[in-house]
Length: 306
Image (cartoon, rainbow, N blue to C red; front, side, top):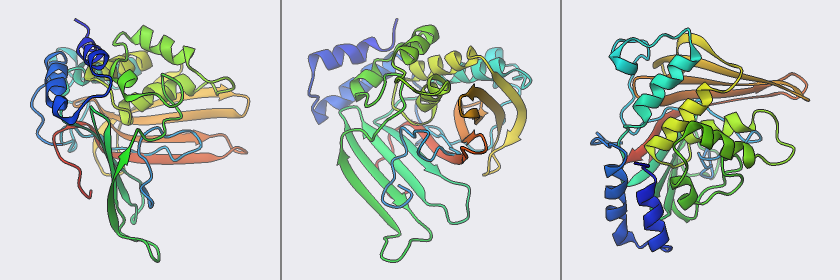
């Protein structure tokens, strides 16, 4: 059965969900995504951690609906059939991550926590509930003059998502109803690619579902499988992210009118978490950004200073 149907039914029946309905909605989502119990789950000025466009800072990220602590994607027990994951194949890495992703736990909040690879990097965090409530928070070890070292805010509406399989400014309801078939999901991204976008748009939109945008576990699994079928994806072998966590490195390279561009991911296939992400653009049109994902996924942990 399609795991999106309970959410579709809920939103059709409750166009303006009330807070007391969230528990019922969460239970229906969990029942259709084979959820297991979760163990827990703006650089300055509360920078959003979702929807990072090419013009924004893409980052090396640590995802965690579960605690991600150095699990290696090439160990026995992390791949399909509980066998070792071969890192010489990008498709094998992505498909193993997809298998883990579709049985990931759900929770009360969609939560993303990120930082960057520098000694004084701030930590940013965001939470959103199924009824659309949102909080953002940050902790800055080296605040500037007049800036608070940490803050938390409750906001209205989703953060900007300029890159999405649904096109600009998707709704939460639409994100929760995304298809779980990888070909359908990719076709949706292709159909909603803005005119004039580079050849990397579809790949970036699928990556956003893995690193920042709220959706169901099975839709995230479909994004992994869609990426496995993208041309030009290759494995770079085993590596560590800037925090020393082990994972499989993947590269997606494109050639456009402004020269080559490349996304790189470090994926923990044992947990389906993207640990780090970088984006580079050719010389002359230089851009080199990275983010570390400290947490990504559904959690019951309440919003707080990270």
